[in-house]
Image 1 (cartoon, rainbow over the protein chains, first blue to last red):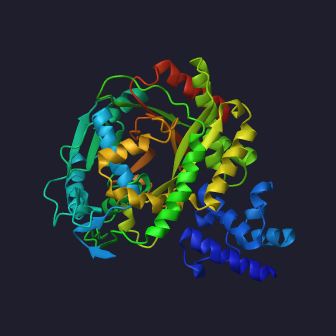
Image 2: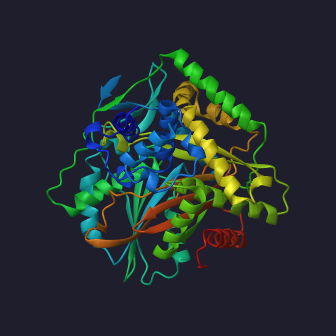
Image 3: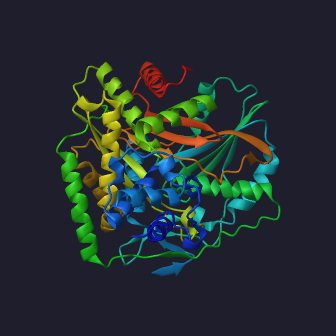
Length: 80
Length: 440
């Protein structure tokens, strides 16, 4: 799966979880600007497990991994 | 689906909230109410506030609705054509607003005062001092959940701030009696039942309720300053991980409550904490202001594991993850639709059954950063905002966190007589110590 594919899937999932229009979310958007709380964040982690078969909750995630959707996609790409 | 300006079918969570309201009126003399308080930097123009408040309230007939049923059995909110009465605004003059305790005592009186009748669901309180003032909106949880009430107050603030801001409460509510799709509800109910059976294997600890009726709720507000708040959020990041403030705050509260049980020399086994979560689909901002759009996650903590903060946080995170992955909050919302055919007294008794009357150890909620919050009220700077909920009893004890303007607030709400003043002091000291904050 290419980085672009991962980003597209993430944007789709995040749009659904945050009830935002897909077109309003960009890959270089900082995560904290998406208005996500602990619950929304866990929903994203569950979405990642179901979509990419990766259980990120068990890893030590850093702010850097979630700087932008692009950086999260890079993390997923490395782990796949 | 029904679209109507005069009728809005209640959801399952609305009906559970109505049941809690019924039970609280029986046990504490007032219903399932809460209050949002704005602490303001100076005195407020009472006459101007009254005029604008009356105009604003009259835009929303839904505010004076009441619960009824028709031949379809599903309860609904009957909405009048227009608002008959002026806003219930009470003004308290206090030349010098003394300590935080004095102010909380006044505010406590307002949230413990029952509404005048079954069509009144909102009351406003203005506490006027010379140098500062407090504006409180007391609300019926049957009409608003905490986020909805905050959003409604935000709307009023925007209305106050801008003469050209138009607001229309002439809302055509879309709702459903939803007495179809029985298989879906059955499967959701089965999943919820399995979870409740798993939780009920260990009866949760709860503080014994004081005897006597018509007990009021009391409050302790713990406000952390900007430096302390920053330290708490840093701790949350270091101990729990990115965006994991809720599991961190909850784990620290569990440790502190465990200390309270230990101080009473009670042999404890496990604690159970329901945490409300927002389920708004975000489709219609105005409709979603009203009624309840919450579901719950349930967290269990073994008393023997509470000393290890890291382990406790990991357990809370894991439970959160598993419940979200299993779709538990959505199943609970779906299954609770079935409860609406049960009359309130019957559902009240049913809610007590699975956990032998001990419904939870305490209630917890965390309202995070709200970027929509205007910084002023009628041109006056808002110094702080916090919530003062009455908590269903049992358990009669709740911890409510919110974040405003760089500051974290934690309000302890407790039924009079459930815990003593020294014990509340101990809880505050324990929380401050564990958060790495200074003593008040």
